[in-house]
Image (cartoon, rainbow, N blue to C red; front, side, top):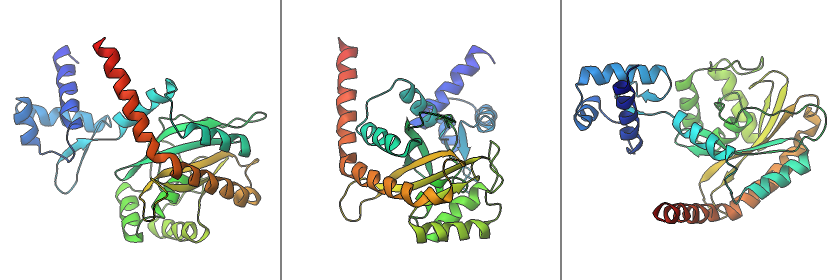
Length: 274
């Protein structure tokens, strides 16, 4: 790939990043002063590489979540302060397992924070940039259970039951099988993944809200995960109770997160000027 081609790719990504809605190819070509045919070839490559998605009905283009995933992975590597870190660390110490927090972004979940509680034996420590397969993960089912059933099934059906990585042997493979798992999730009040997302692992997850106010929107999910030998079904109730407590704490401090982001952005701006 030439330097010019790389520059065009970056221009496309920057243009799409500034759009709240998906974009028509012709509109994007006009904005970037590129022939539509050349842009179409470029978009085909970006789609194949997972950076751009195309709506099958409108044929419009938008950034995929890969960019956000890389950004959050970078933030995680830099140990960016976050008001929820203390809650997640406390949960990890209590459960002695791997705990993670994901936020809702459109019709997806994206990992943003983690805490390792396992101090001996096997340590489950998956990649934070890993895709959250909604139908196979405890986090995915916990979030989808908060949506109307028709909407949840539409989201899963649109993605299908395959993934970019190998799933566990017990993951759902049909919409009817997933519907049953979703019903069970609603009834028990928390999501379970028992060798669904990955062989030999189990996870429990619950949603958390953007505040403690009645009717607050679901902001994300938190989970506890580890080897099945340490998280048998007998522990599910205990872990779910710990997660629900943590979720209530997070809802109480979640509004502070935006203020913290504002302070961090202000500090960065001052440093850049100086």
